[in-house]
Each structure stands twice: as C-alpha cells, then as structure tokens.
Image (cartoon, rainbow, N blue to C red; front, side):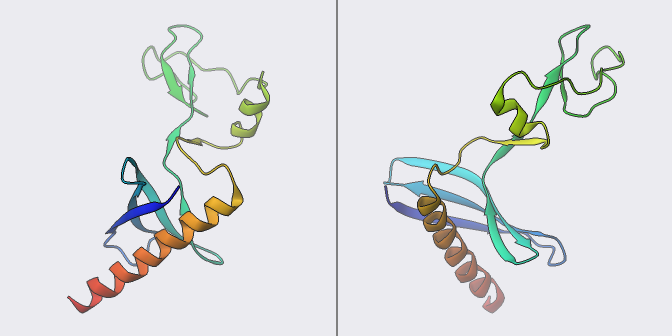
Length: 130
C-alpha cells in the first residue's frame, strides 16, 4: 500500500500541542481524515483519528462519555466504571478515546508518520514564506 497524497491543514496557535490535521490518500482509492500532528515531549508525532468512548446509562440507555457522573439524557447518577468484560475493553478503560483507524504494523506506522511529518514541515515552511 502506498501513500499517494498527504494534505496538511495547519492550526494557528503556535503555543498549543496540536500543530495540524492531515488527510492521507492511499493508492488513490482510500482516504483517512483527521490524523493529528502533535508536539510531544520528545518531538512531533501523529495521532490517528479517534472517537470518545461512551457507555450507556443503566436507566435510559443514553450513551454518555466515559467518566461522566450524570446521564446527559435523564440526569440519573451513573455508576462508577464497571469491570471491563472483554480484553479489548480493558485496554480502552484507561483511555477516553478509541482509534477509528490505525496501522497494524510498526513498519507501516513509521512509514505513515514519516510521510505526514514531511508534508507538515513542507506546509509549515510554505506558510512561513507566504
């Protein structure tokens, strides 16, 4: 699988950790949007698109964000986090977000990150000179 296009949208605030969003096209047939370029403690890295993890209210079944204390639909008090029933839920129980799409292999993750960060640097330089 080849990356055929990377589009970067720079974020304006230089003091924030989020530097840009990327849209990546694979083999001219598949697009992944909202890949984030983030400034971490050891430099830039990418974060894959994600969604907030939600759990249903036991009273009305409305899906509330993880760690909510009250239901946004019926205002019932929500129980403290329950013990995860599946292994994959255990991995996400510590996180409020779950990836929507992500690389399976470390090799492809490195390739994707390299291409996105290269495009980010080019766009940053182009934005500075404009």
